[in-house]
Length: 254
Image 1 (spheres, rainbow, N blue to C red):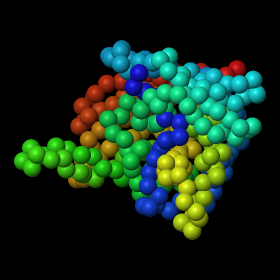
Image 2: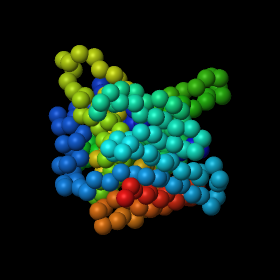
Image 3: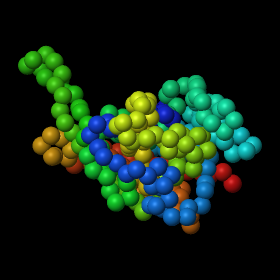
């Protein structure tokens, strides 16, 4: 299954290219969404009428006290290890991971390698700069080009927030100090902090160096009374031509 979620590598970007709010991820989430009902994701189910490879399910398991214990894709799992209430490690399959572009079946990895150029009013990454390589037959080498990803969001909370909080991930991100005078911290976690969205992404537009649209991902979600995504249709277009679509369904712990 290709749509997977890498837990500690969420939403990467370089700290050197941006300035960011001093607020923690939790504070930004609350400021953007207000008093939100806490829901934990039970399953994320993906279906495609066009490609069997675009199908699969992620299942989230929890301990009796509500801590995230594992995430499984049916072939392997990532297991969460704690010392008391503190997350100390995530073990198991690296293929069981969390990223926006994996969920959206994007051909790019802006959320893993990019630099945030602009945030929106809620603190969501709005424009990300990243590099793409293309083979040059004349020089027999790969050349690097600067691309951008422009992201828009629904006025709904990131449905994964409390699930990640149950796994200790939000505590890890809240502990990141975006201050260059501080002692060195994990670059991977700093990048995750910089690109964490507090709202639910609804569209990603990828542009080349000339500003031409290369690829577009669009998600049309249905929300419940608490503004949590319950289902959606995610469609893609390459160079203006429809490329495909699949459906996603969320269930939550009762």
